[in-house]
Amino acid sequence: MAGQRVSYRPALVPVPCRFERTWRDGGNMQTTKVRGQLVTREDVLQAMKRFDKEYRASFPQRKWVRYAIEHYGQHYPPKTILRMIVGGSIPGGGKPVNSRFEDLAFKVVTLDEPPEGGMDDDEDAADTALSLESDLENSLLKNLGQLEKGLKLYTKGSITGQQLQAGSAGRLDLLGVDSSDCLVVIELKAGEADRQVCGQIQAYMGWVKENLAGKRRVRGIIVANEFTDRTRYAAAMVPNLASKKYEVIFKFSDGEN
Image (cartoon, rainbow, N blue to C red; front, side, top):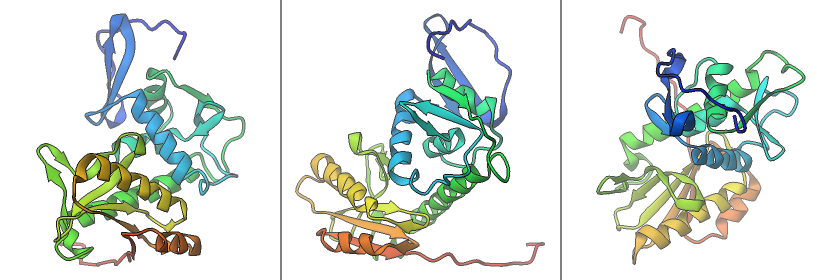
């Protein structure tokens, strides 16, 4: 944590989820790795912004995690923030997760009251929503044409349209190219899309237009399970912005297969 002297340790005891540490400048923490992915302080700040925009309003108010990242008077759930950065599920919790944020000079606090119904019920619910978005994303990646005929993932050199960092606009879910060579920004929502998603995808579309499109047209598609009336009204006033509803279909097979 900031203000504390950290001693150099040449060897570290392995912890769950393949958390790794990178030590520089006489032992001051600069970066950390989770499942082989480099995580920086800026990654955490971007995830916090996304949490504030997309999840804070729906995050349970009477049920919170036992630990929280405290930043400018706001509390953030550690596992959910880490999940937003690296994807996939984050098993366990407590010190192995909290120390990642402390390594990056964030303050982790213990809340006064334990959550109702179990330590991580609320955070697990948010993690489930994020996991569903990841599943939806992976399903679309296998065949973007199922969303729209002729739609393909954007690629240019080493850059791909999956989880593309769009500068100060944030990180967009998917960027595709349609059959007319238009760039298509795709924003995924696990459950209900509220009106904030319209502003969010417009920011992505603006960044793509300015940085990648050149003379090509830029479109947007919001994919969600439900849409509020406000979302539909707002989207109707944005040129080149469409909405598509997904459905979850279960398949069953014999356990031996």
